[in-house]
Amino acid sequence: MIVILSSFTVIYCVVIMLFIYGWHTIPIFKSQPEKTNTWSAVSIVICCRNEENRLMPLIDSIKKQSYQNFEVIFANDHSTDNSLAILLEQEKENNQFRVINTTHQGKKIALREAIAITKNPLIFCCDADCTLPVSLLEKIVSYHLRYNPDLLIGGVKYTANNFFQTMQATEFGSLMASAAGSCGVKMPILCSGANLSFPISTWKKYAQNLNDKAVSGDDMFLMLNVKHNQGNIQFLKSPDAFVTTQPADTTSDFFNQHQRWSAKTTLYHDWQTIFVAITVFAWCLIWIIAVIHAFFNVKIWGLVILTWCIKLFCDGCLLIPFFNFSQQKKAILTIIPAAVTYPFYIVYTAISGLFTSFRWKNSVAKK
Image 1 (cartoon, helix red, strand yellow):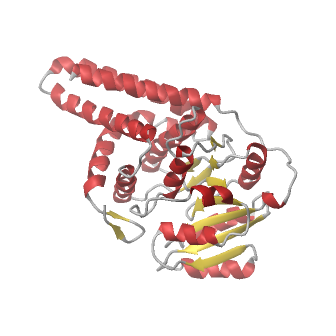
Image 2 (cartoon, helix red, strand yellow):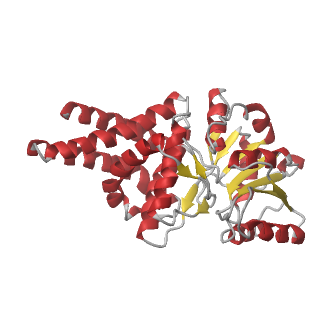
Image 3 (cartoon, one colour):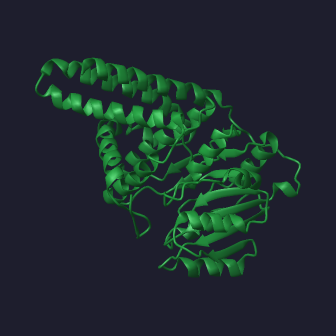
């Protein structure tokens, strides 16, 4: 037990130190006036199912963008609330907006049908429960014109109005920090469809085999396909380029979300992504076993506490600079309590995600 826990602590810390180095390697991007041309036009693609309470903040943030050369395609995925009525009203008022009803249920179909009718060469994907910073499109267009990435991963952060939401923001921030850090060392392992942009040529070239066994996750499968084919994947490091989205409302929603994420990991074939996922899960599982064992053998309590403190130190070296940069200083306050609970729900959701069903926007998806 001592040897195994110590070994996995070392492996985990090496991975995190690699991400720390990657984060600091990425230069901070500052947009500059670029020569505009027809390539600069953006198609914003948003899949929507039952988001009536969150659509207007998103729409208002789109209308306020400093860069206005865009169209918006809303793919309504069989909403049963007032979402479609809201979208159709916006379509009447703004000729930049277009609404389609998808032929079949599911985010995969919605995303593909929306992208199929886009008119512009640059695609930006986000979720219907997001809000965009005012200069986001300007930065995205500027970055693509200057560096021409095949895929540009953007930052995402949670709103946090209470302790539960702040804890979620801390945990989700660790994923975003890992996504950025892994990009910095040219081994991207994570991305979010809430802030993802790419030329339409990337979609046409790499949007094959996006794994129809999963009900969602085309963002990750697209990234992994681009990576597999040695495409150019970069992270947009700018404090003003983080999309804001909503955390889970309840603990049930929180665990359902993580079970959905866990279920998709079995479909990944990228060895770096798998290695990091196994490392995190294995450390959490072994540490929990060590905690249980320590109740019967008090001599190993010292190792249990020491390995947890070492992991916390490494995590803090990644998260504190990331949270300061992304203007999420409240999340720093919950790094320690999140570190206490993290191993337990990671193990639970990872195992349950393999064997149980999960809800997908008021429907049930089977593993």
